[in-house]
Image 1 (tube, rainbow, N blue to C red):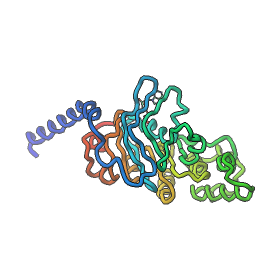
Image 2 (image 1 turned 90 degrees about the vertical axis):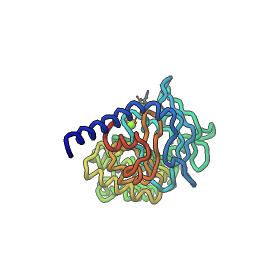
Image 3 (image 1 turned 120 degrees about the vertical axis):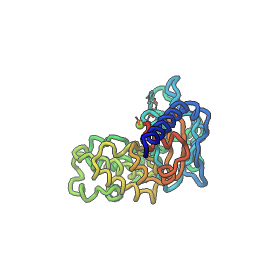
Image 4 (image 1 turned 180 degrees about the vertical axis):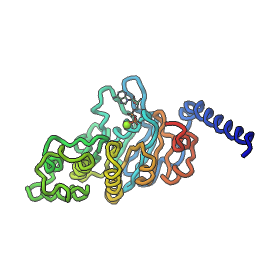
Amino acid sequence: MTSIATEQAGEMLISKTERTESQVVRDIEHGETVGEPLMEDAKMSVRNTDVFYGDKQAIFGVDLDIGKNQVIAMIGPSGCGKSTFLRCLNRMNDTVEGCRVSGELTLDGSDIYSKKMDVVALRARIGMVFQKPNPFPKSIYDNVAYGPRLHGLASRRGELDEIVENSLRRASLWDEVKDRLHSPGTGLSGGQQQRLCIARAIAVSPEVILMDEPCSALDPIATARIEELIAELRENYTIAIVTHSMQQAARVSQRTAYFHLGHLVEVNDTEKVFTSPEHELTEAYITGRFG
Ligand SMILES: Nc1ncnc2c1ncn2[C@@H]1O[C@H](COP(=O)(O)OP(=O)(O)OP(=O)(O)O)[C@@H](O)[C@H]1O
Ligand SMILES: [Mg+2]
């Protein structure tokens, strides 16, 4: 390339970046979500959802369907509302002081914010795994048995043993812990603790699993185990995962949702989002121009 051509290319890049930055607010305040946020036979549906912390709005008018037996990845710059949105899905925001959620959110067509909804039962149907593994200060066995006991899922000790073993097997942790089920869960490595938390989440047979950056505290080997596990779990569960790793989103999910400043900018098949994003903001984020 001649130096003039190089300069021109450089200028085009700069003006594109500037246009992107200056259009951000106008774009997303007036724009609809691009791509395909809605789908047939959704497991969960979110319509017209706003979230406020006190006076401050964190989520703006989100419409999104979450498909059955699929993994949907939520990506976007820090502070864009991914965790806030995820917590709407199992009413975890109820526990956050000053947080208000409005809109229609359903699980299999039932309103999860209905006054009649039993929130403890709801959270058994929609389990959650957090960024930092948070086993209870109990034995490995009791961590996994906690939910089934709380919800009365086993009538005999043998039945409970079976649930614990199956959950640990499905979380691919059984072989590593079967000889020390009564040692503290907190004595496991970080990656093992995260698999224990996944075993604890699946022990109550949830229908949906929400994961908020489940691998961010893990090394690449432990991360690869969790990603394999997500691929297996998808056969039986619906999964929504927040991640800062675009490689991870590309590896584990079938759909990807891009959030920006509390707005849902784009939802599409994962492959499309990463190869030919429709929205300029999505493109800017996945190519590393901001975020
Ligand atoms: N408990 C809270 N009280 C007040 N504001 C909050 C609270 N939690 C989050 N926020 C604000 O809501 C917005 C969205 O935050 P959220 O944690 O959902 O973002 P995020 O996309 O998950 O970010 P990160 O990638 O850093 O985890 C931010 O402006 C944040 O400061
Ligand atoms: Mg977050």
